[in-house]
Amino acid sequence: MLAATIEHLGNSENIKRLGHAFKAYNFAPTSLLSESAADSVLDTYMSAFILGEDLFELNVAQILELKIQLLILTSLCAQRARTWNLKPVQSRNPLVALTFH
Image (cartoon, rainbow, N blue to C red; front, side):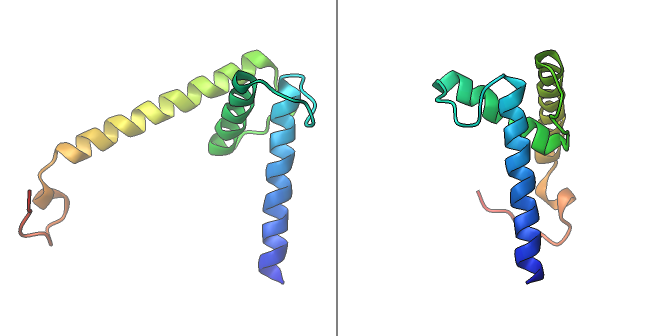
């Protein structure tokens, strides 16, 4: 019962966040969207979801800033991953004695 309640709360939160993404672009949730408009709405929704932002009452300029923040975060994570991958396997995990190529 508790798991179902938590799932319902999470689902209703996501629906609300998606509705705010539609509203930010002045689209009704029942609107028929072009592919590029749908991409914009979904990009905005996912940016807000990943960054934990509430889209309620954000304008398009603020949404653009949100997407820029996500790009910066993604870039920093990619840089860190590349640096980590350049280290020899043994230095990352001392339990690994052999590597196979």
